[in-house]
Length: 392
Ligand SMILES: C[S@@+](CC[C@H](N)C(=O)[O-])C[C@H]1O[C@@H](n2cnc3c(N)ncnc32)[C@H](O)[C@@H]1O
Ligand SMILES: [Zn+2]
Image (cartoon, rainbow, N blue to C red; front, side, top):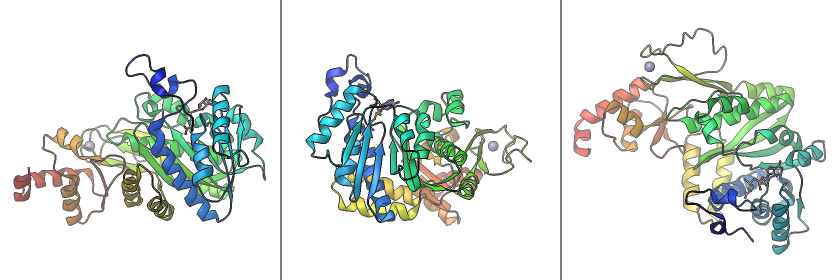
């Protein structure tokens, strides 16, 4: 691949090099692209035939080229970028890799390209929308250009709106209210999925998240689309709200009739609660799909293999866990306690018969069905116990 030499375009320290270069290329997104290769391979194996892929915002073409080279059973890839220089570079890279027969390179607006593929027999098996910031401007047309039973992958890098730093921007783009809690990255991911589900429903399409992850400065979702009004109704049932108490860490979710019977006070400590949503409350990944991805990564020689395996393990483990997680050091800070190792907290909660899992969202985080007051009580007990005194 020929890619921009990023150091040549940075004028001041701290500048974001990828968007300074005349053609976009971000080496930090290697993990994102590796995982995309695994997910697309898992999808190809599930459908059991050759697939077509579209990458409507391709930059230098690295992602689409990797799909053609690394995913088995790919019939054709269409890559596109509105930037003339990106188009030329992508075309050069496609030729360099001897892929001109399988990859078509286009130079047009992504929505225009997707609209041209919005009819039966013209649709793609997989569309990967990897934009600057939000994928929402491309969501409707990507939805229409993905075939029934196809896979839609989306990256969102606009974490300031999604994590609640700019709530109005989030409401505008995603139609849901964010909240600056310690688990705001999960809220961000669920807001994206909620928006995907409501956009799909307008087209009478239902969605099932097969894989999702939150990494560094972005969230990424892979959803299976199924055509039909009933499918759409079914996926809308996964929408709801998260209520959060900033005083005692209590949180709860509401799927239907969210506003009935809620007086806005925390049932645990009576403080005023705040909320996030509407957002996706259903599962954010599918175990079978994750297992296929895991098998794939074992076979491959990715530079980031270890990190990907660890992420996959955590995502599989938290598949069935409830929404929201606790970040141990943040809770302990607020409670004025030293932070015990996460594993010892999980053990103590398990001993009390609660379900627990680690989470990929935060290395110091964990998910549990235990109420917040049990979590805080358990932390206090760990501290005063003999074991606690010896350890900390
Ligand atoms: C984040 S970069 C893509 C990176 C690429 N997917 C990768 O994995 O390396 C976003 C790209 O979208 C292109 N772009 C922005 N608006 C567009 C539009 N309306 N239609 C097509 N391309 C667009 C930009 O020129 C830029 O190259
Ligand atoms: Zn409370």
